[in-house]
Amino acid sequence: MIIGKAGVTREVLREIDARLEKKEVVKVKMLKTALKREEGGRRELARRVAGSLGARLMGVRGYTFILYRPRRGGSKVKRPSRRLLGSWVE
Image 1 (cartoon, helix red, strand yellow):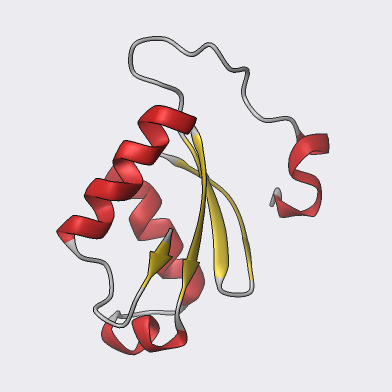
Image 2: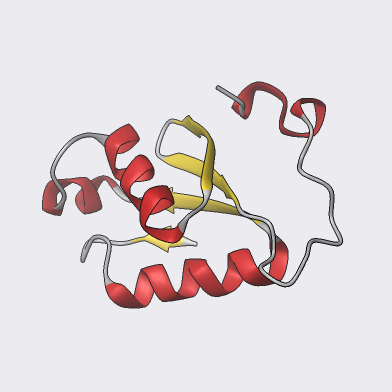
């Protein structure tokens, strides 16, 4: 997923939500121009997106962050391990 120059819109949140429901782990990239439309820095933007979707922010690296949320109907996938995510986990 990419957060573009329009910033965090309902459509972007809806798409991230759908991908979290399907995959449980989503990597989101943000353009530098997206940060101009949003208050705070990149970490704050990532926290707000995670909070609004009920997801866990696994880490922020540059302009990319990873979100995790177990499926609502029960997860078939175990929570991602620290080894799997490597240096992404904060």
